[in-house]
Length: 222
Image (cartoon, rainbow, N blue to C red; front, top):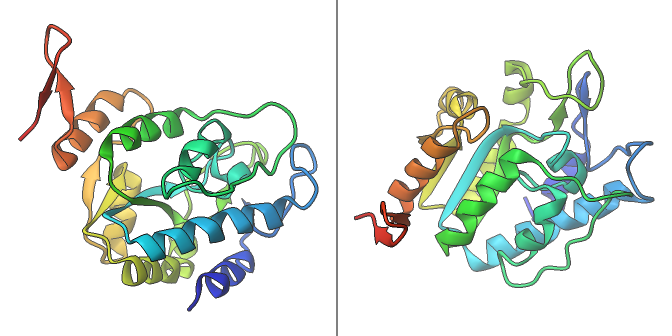
């Protein structure tokens, strides 16, 4: 499967109570031709990752309404779209929405670490769409097992195509889902809801990143 075929297949994925950012438009926030813009963003990142190779794939649970629903890129809000563009050089990634750029707490923590890793990382979700609750489309819910199993072939293709040194599961839900799919992963705590310190500590351990000592100087984990 080529990146174009991957994205075409992904654009055809449909479930009740979900938003597919590669095929659907949000009447409140999306710009004209938003699905095409998000497909192009993903295509650029996929092709760059395949060409350059990746050290790791970081996998979270599913797209959030403040992040990937708007950008088409996992763990990436509009505040960090330019940072994602620079992850593989200088990709021409484009916003697909109108109005002020939106930020997401999880994306902020993830990109804080990515700036320090200095290795090519591909970002993905166990379920690659935005599942929302009964309270409305601007909410988040956990995907269900049927949704996960129906979309597992995307993750299988990414692991086979990109051949990462390691897969990182961000959060217990992602770790459990990857285990259900028989994908071995290094588990880190999700940075939201008080988990940012533990998330940063585990990422420092995995990537031997510098940590501040008590005086504010930097020491390197070994």
